Length: 224
Length: 286
Image (tube, rainbow over all chains, first blue to last red; front, top):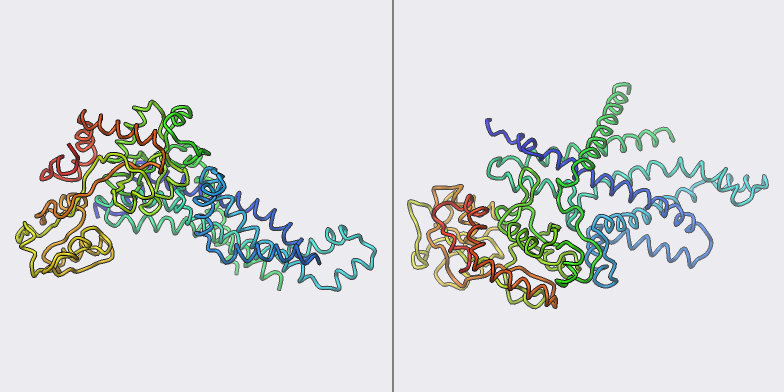
């Protein structure tokens, strides 16, 4: 066990590099979530309006981002967008763009579902009390909607964090990409290094996602 | 229920620690993952534009030792990277690396993510249609390895024997056209080398540069046939139509070849991996 594979993690700056890669994943996921949720709220509310045209457009938008795999989306923004529209941002911002649009689509459906599942009697009681539309939304719908949508939103966040592992296809140095560099560079010295490097990544992702998932579960249980 | 709560709280704290330490490493060591700052807005990448903006964007491999990889200090090294740094130095500009995989090298150029590709890019007629190749700086061809105690030194000796190859390689292409050789095909490099070790074939054919490095690690085998079939070349590639950079790169390669730069490159980056049996002239061009 002189050359135990676990040492691969502590050679040179390997551990620091993996963590720096993880940070890239975290901040891209966090910013995408913030932007995506903000847009998603607006789209979600618009989708409950009676205007058929707006609803149709937003429905198409949702279905597009739901059907197209994220990896294809990343390819589209990174390789096709610059070629056809001459939009050429750094890869990380392209990733934020793709992820935000995807989060916005998914979240708009969550918001719409939550608004529509508030019992009709609540809305009617509010109107009967003489609340304006904005007051109705602020004091009656919003508090209930937040409670209804929160577990699904947290689940969406865990999905976004996991999906950052696809970013390696667009040359972003996130944790998986760094891991592959380390594995290939140490293949000779640590043939079992692959197990330890991916093992560490498994633990890191688990540690990030588990508290979120536990929180969502707790909220769901409380609602019952 | 109580126990689970404590577990969840602990997991929450651990997650917080991971996020904070990741942020710490992310902010304090931004240079560790060189190439993060990847591509900037630019649709102009002629030679004058590169000089004006002060950096050249080079697409390299990050996981192919000894050609383009990242060492334990987080520094990009390798035969291709050594050339890349020299090109930047001779242009008197800084260098920015874009890490690519084998299958996005062309897209990286065409989408203006990089000015030049130095990623073990073998010149093929199909690729010539979509990118512009400069003069080659390395040659590769198919080689054959066999056990030291039963070496195979010529194509004649392969007749009627089993030859191990990986699907889709030039080695497979070449030997599929030769009669009398039984091919045993595998999906990955790891599989093919394991098959040879288990004695499932008399020999194994692949790009000779891989084989040199592998034989160094596995001294029971020899590269019996160093090169067979047509020779192929590895060249820098630029975006189709980028004439000024192509012209400059051609002059640079010629100049560097005359100066013996590639011999030095070979000795620094490749020799430690290839062993003594291989001479620089097996890889580099004169």
